[in-house]
Image (cartoon, rainbow, N blue to C red; front, side, top):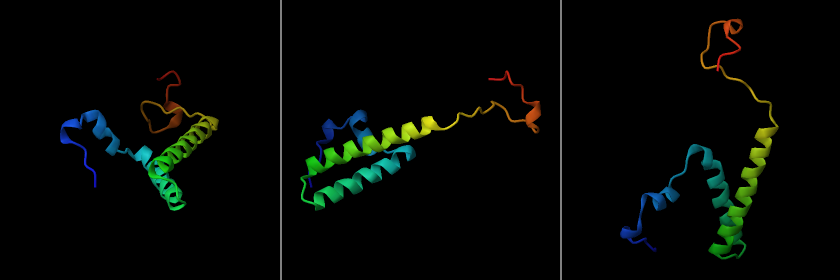
Length: 90
């Protein structure tokens, strides 16, 4: 297994190994697509590139879907009765 020279590891490059909970779904989808493409005979580099392209499209579609939903206002403070919330409160 190839290992990166430890002197080349920077905080920026180690970010590649970190995945937030928002990215987990896309990270898994990318790896599954990558594996499927390699099983079909593509090289790792080609499979990775194609899987990333597909994942970007998934992300763009999710953004479009999110933008199509109604916006909701969440008050800074919650009171016992909704009628007591000041509509001018930010």
